[in-house]
Amino acid sequence: MSMIFFASVIRVRDGLPLSASTDHEQNVSVQETKKYLKALSRKLEQLPDRCTLKRGPHSVNFISSLGVSYMMLCSESYPNVLAFCFLDELQKEFITTYEMSRINTAVRPYSFIEFDSFIQKTKQRYNNPRSLSTRMNLADMQTEIRLRPPYQVSLQELGLENGHRKNPEYKGIVPHQRLEPLTLTGIVSFLLSLLCAGLNLIRGVHAIESLLQNDGEDYSCVIAFFLGTAACVYQCYLFAYSTSWRNMKSFLAFGLICLCNMYLHELRHLWQLLFHVTVGAFSTLQIRLRQPESKSPDYNV
Image 1 (tube, rainbow, N blue to C red):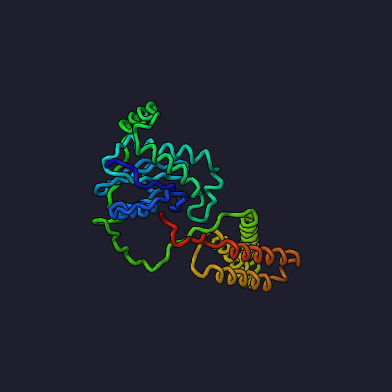
Image 2: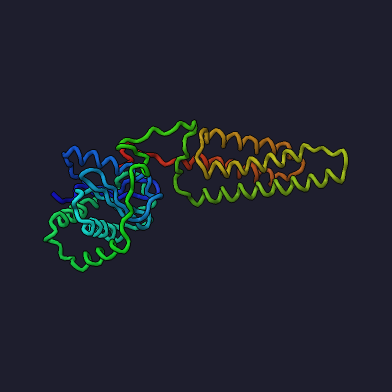
């Protein structure tokens, strides 16, 4: 029997499920095929905007647009033109119902679960093609599919072999997690850290020039300036990327900034010292506040 079993809406950049149909299909084969949607959701950024995956008696089709992917699971005999018209309707309704800012900043899975009501109504219509009145749209989609057929995804592209995920090689390094969205104060702290790094670098270069002109001068101040530069740049790196022991590293970088400015107290005014230390403390706080995005256990579809 040709029909649509399941549909979902996924954010492309990280595979976060935004909405999905809530019906519970008891067919074991359908439940097994649903697992392929998880593998696909992890690869959306690497795949074309219109794809099909054939798996036994079922097909998985999806389209992606504006950073959102619309996926559906149907029987293999379900007409392609109806499948992609169904996905096209989901896409048009979703992008007109929800603002992109909400979609891009969503953190919790299924933040738009209320969209399921539209998915269900549309699914019922497309499971009874005689009730469809969009004959013109069907003809347009048929022409589009003929001119640009959907890309056929293979199991190997998903890292699957004979329907099972291949064991990834152990690399000893945990991949970077996505950090929470940038804030205005975070951007300000990043720019101020870069400014402090630039000031330390300029003073360090001038200190080297002074050493070359006056033999016997103490070169330790040059080291202090360059260590301060490195600490500020490293704080910028910690703010931008997620690494292991990130908070501890930020405190160590701040400690190095304080030590360097204590050593250079004779070469700087009090206000200059306060500025560098305050920026270091401010950047450390922003690193602490910008944590990796949390993922719920049901993060994938």
